[in-house]
Image (tube, rainbow, N blue to C red; front, side, top):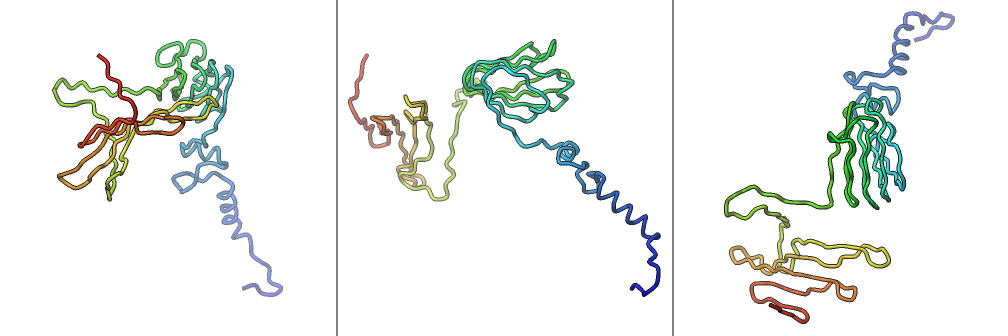
Length: 243
């Protein structure tokens, strides 16, 4: 408690106050529960965390720079992405490139390589992530065309694609999975033109029944053309058989 006309002895607290001030203004180490930085950017660097993904649309050739780290570039035309020197970008730098209007050529700096080659191409409709190791680059494709390959020489089915509807209450008429075949209409809108669908006819254990539906758009409406089930094969429309 302070006493009237008695000097305040602050000197003995100076070291403690200075320590608090220093601690508040300096980077607190990660090992001490801090971020290791005095700003968001330096804190992310110390913690090894990327900044938020930045979207950018590109319609002509450009050079990817250090600031493009962790960016998503949608390329709307046939173009070339030139890469800044790997040493400048540094190990861990990465960029996601989406070819959405033409093939995109990735061209490293000078004699540097990507996947061991002087350039690589991201085909139209595909994506690739470009990663720098500080010396050269690698690219991992995210294709729009997928292949399931089995090297099994036996007679068992393979490869096998399973679409599992893990419902706790399966019921008749449940559509349990499908494949949608989509494209554009004349106005540029996304349109489903056909589907292959599986459905439950009877979920009763040991006596289950199912159906396979082939559907197509007719006058703008998705319509079941063929229904294959245990009782019959139903064709909606004219069935033409040749050969």
